[in-house]
Length: 120
Length: 241
Image (cartoon, rainbow over all chains, first blue to last red; front, top):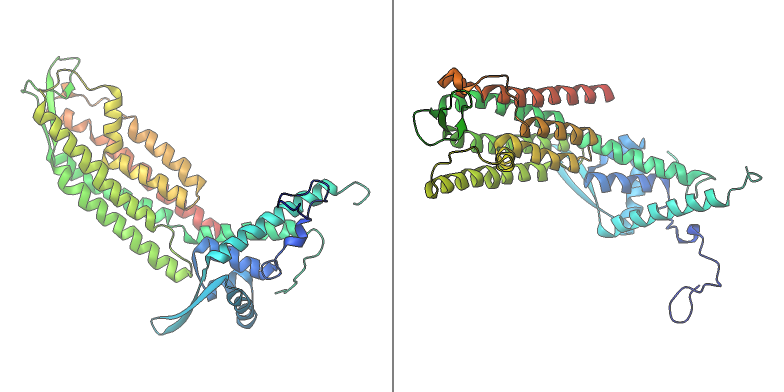
C-alpha cells in the first residue's frame, strides 16, 4: 500500500477502515469493558456486570480475552470479607481503545460519504 | 448479552454511541459534586462568627484601607482571626471530601476522580490564601499606610486569593475532572458573585458595626450560593436515578 520510500502511494486506493479493526477490541462487550475501564480508571467486576448486563461467566470470558491480549490487568482482593475483582486498563488497552474509536469514526464518515440515495 | 464479533450494518454508530453512553454513566457515578458544595457551604457559614469577632476596625488611625466617602473618615480593617480558621477548616474540608469520594467510589465499584480536586484545593489554600496574607503583611510592614483605596485589579486579585475565591478556583478543577458542564457554569456564576462584591448599603458611616457588617452580607451570599448549588446538584442526581 505504500511506495518503497515508506510514503503512501497516491495511485493506490486508500485502505478501508474495516481492514484495520482489531477483532479483540471490535466487539460490543469488550469495547464496553475498555470504555468503562478507561473512564473509571479502575473498575470493579460487579460494576461491569451491571452496566453491561452480563452474566458473571460471560464477563469472565471477555475479561480473559482482554487480559490475554494485554489490554487489561485483573487484580483480586478483599473488601472486608467480600472478595472483589478490580480491572485496570493497561497503556496498550488505552491505545487500542483510542484506535478503535478513531476507526469507527472513519468508518462512519466513509459510510456517510459513500451512502447514495439508491443504496437506501 | 451478545458476542457478535462483526457488527451488522449501521453498527459503528451504535458502537460509538454505546461507548459514549457508558463513559457518561461512569462519570455520573464518580461525581461527588453536591457533597463537595455542601461541605464548602458549611465551612463558609461556620466562618461567619470567626470572621465577625476577629475583625478589627481602627477608625481613629491615620492608616486607611477603607475610606468613608460621606464622612471623610478613614478606617484600617484587619482580620487576623481568619488565618486561624480558614486554612485548617479548608484543609479539613478537602480531606473530608477526598475521604467521602474514595468511599463512594469504592462502594460503587469505580476509581476515584475527585482526588486531584482535593489536592488542588488544599494546595490553593496553602499557596493562595497564606501566600496572599503574607504578601499583605510584608507590604504593610515596608510601606506607609495607603491614603487611597487600592486599584480595582489589586482588590480583584485579593478577592480571588481569599478563601471564597480559592474555593471557586478549585471548583473549576473539579468541573474539569468530572467533565461537568453544569458545575462549570455554576462555578463561573459563583466566582462572579465572589469577585464582584455585593453591598446592601451597610456603610462605615454607620459606625464600627456598620464597617464590620459590610463584610457579613457577602459571606452569607457566598455560603448561600454554595448551599443552593449543593441542593441543586443533589436534586439533579436524585432525578437521574
